[in-house]
Amino acid sequence: MGQIEDLRLFALVVENRSISKAADKLNIAKSAVSGRLKLLEARFGTNLIDRVPGAWDVTASGLELYQRSVQVIGDVDEIDSDFTQTCQMISGPLNISAPRDFGLTYLSPAILSFSKRYPEIQMKVDFDDRAVDLNRENYDFAIRITAKVEDAVVAQKIGCAQLRLCASPFYLKRKEEPKHLNDLINHRLLHFGKAR
Image (cartoon, rainbow, N blue to C red; front, side, top):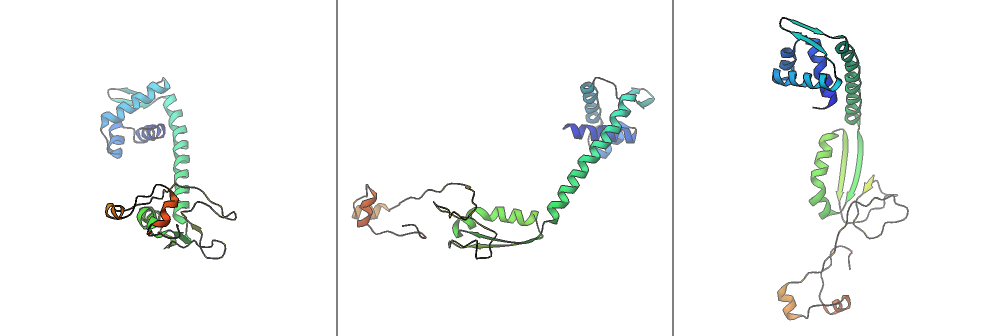
């Protein structure tokens, strides 16, 4: 448990005036709550709750910690609520262009996860190898596989791709294996996209 969780546990013990009731509400063992309380007391070097058979009372230090804990817990819960609502309120159209094979192979899981997280966003993804014009066409962003990005485009590199030349053993028995790029002039080539 983290410090916030420890403070939350302590506040729950004080509010319920019982370790066992706090344990029930947290759905954990009473011994776990008691153990966390002892660790909290050891961390601050003071008794937070006086526990003797038949008596149970919050000490002055415990009361001060409780009051400050309630404030901290309230602030943390408010931050969590504010940012969760902000994420849920994000809405509107989002138009994306991505290379077909790359998009279908690598982006599909991310797109599905994004759609679940932001259901109010109307996302349209075009899987097309054509380099779209971001200034003239209605796209918010594009993923491109290219060696050079136009100067007018704000870009961020997200990875590297390697191109390979492949040939079947049957083909290489009939044609001499190329050793240099210039040797490719004498070979039959299948090109992918605009790569030459």
